[in-house]
Amino acid sequence: MDANDLLKRFALDGLTFDVGSGGLTRLRLETDLCCSEIYLQGAHLTHFHPRGHAPVLWMSQSSFYEKGKPIRGGVPICFPWFGPNANDAQSPSHGWARLTPWNLLQCQMGSNGEVILTMGCSRAGFQVKYSLTFSTILRMAMTVELEPNACNGQAFESALHTYLRIEDIHRVSVEGLEDTPYLDKVGTPTQRPASHAPIRFQGETDRVYGDTQATCFLNDPGMNRRIQVSKSGSCSTVIWNPWIDKSQRMQDFGDQEWQTMVCIETANIGSNAISLDPGETHTMTAELEVLPIADAR
Image 1: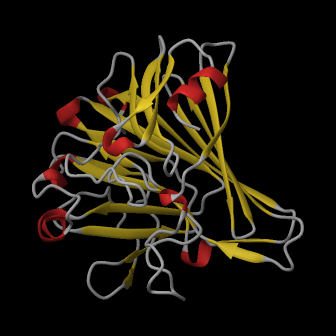
Image 2 (image 1 turned 90 degrees about the horizontal axis):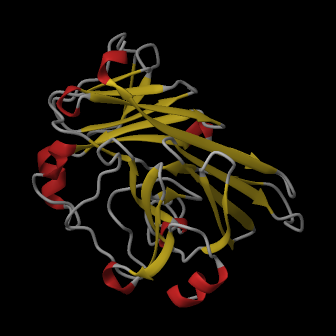
């Protein structure tokens, strides 16, 4: 459906559809509580701005907006694998979900002014629904069902690859994972013990914290805020910043943009991959809330 058809079908105060960057269909939402923007390719959330706060999500100014190419920043959906496909090097990194046009299924307003949008796509025996609840808090819920007629069980990886906007990577810290060991993927992947300290950034960072359902806090004194990232149905958390050299190697990432972003990704990857039998479902959620920096631990 194009923007005009969507507007006729989904009428809601503050909700508009148009042709965004690269000719891709875009949904925009403006309410008394927040402003948001979503591209239907990949069900890709590119903007979330609670009223009274600066935007929460980071977007690269060098991002591609092209059919069949991933958008850099916001919240890409990684599914049904994370990173390269272990069985097919020609398959797209992070799976097909972020490259697929999703269908908008439902738009509704809640009793407290929140807006709930639900999108869906189906492929390879999986039916996926993605529900976004917009208020002063952003809630993302991804439900995966293995179709009942599937001949046997299947496993998948998933991640809400959330890029968060910050003032200066040298000044921020991430709390919540102090007591969790992690896989360090920079260079030769190495399992490392818990640091027993908040995460601070001094170089390229690519860490997978497994077997954790912990809430994380991104402390950002430069923006006078912290962002709380809470989750359910997720046992992996990924922390990522490409730093200088890697950002320069990526065509869709500005050479200096690494200084103003960090990813805290809600995920189920590696040994935390999810296995489903036919007809079974699994839901993973992530919530982002902006808090005053004075509340930092």
